[in-house]
Image (cartoon, rainbow, N blue to C red; front, side):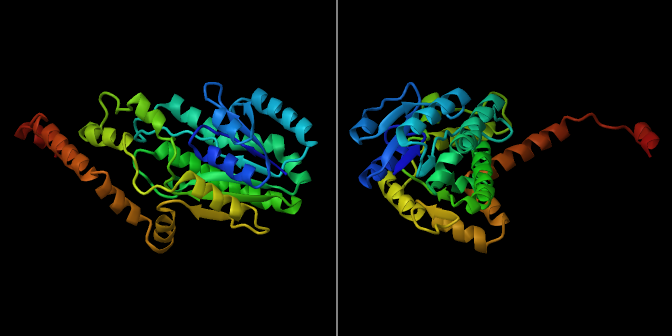
Length: 300
């Protein structure tokens, strides 16, 4: 039995999946980027490969390596590699957005393209790591949310297409898990760009970037639950797991779509932005040139 897991940085979900699957007797191939340390994976007994899911040449080389090592069989593919870019929708840097789509969406697509035959030979399972961000309009995360929504829908179609070939596909709708995915934005000290219409919320934005979500699910607990579900003969199409995932699931099912508008308007102090905009518009109106009676008569 063999498993391939992408994005296995220390302390993350991929690391936890590696430990969990090694504990169940799987031969694990764990991928990392060149700058990431690998001792935690070696300690778990995994075979570590430096590979970038955004580069076709890397994934082809990875495929050849695993093909030789397993005789062309792969039991589990975990599409876990992912990055987060925090920014308002209107201010998003397109280069950052394209980079995130390349990892979060095109990465899993590339992995499936190159590894589907190995999975078919093993009647295997594909695990796509989604997020509640792909379900709700979480403010400041529009581009990230879009990548996860795209992954969910890709996974849905993939599930239908792979079913006749006896390959199971499961979307994991992850809640808050205690990983380091937010650290990149923190290290960058991400701020709103100069001149942003969201400038009245600059302080709130920076606090959001540096946040540590409370009551997060431990990665090892998350990995155990996901693998338990994925190895069932008929796993859930969408498996919701992690802090807040159940709350989001039921609210999204039972409440109107605009419930999220109301919730996030309050949670992210958007009323403060609304008031600032009203003042700006009022000031603009008072600065407008007046129209005298003669000019008004011409208009009439």
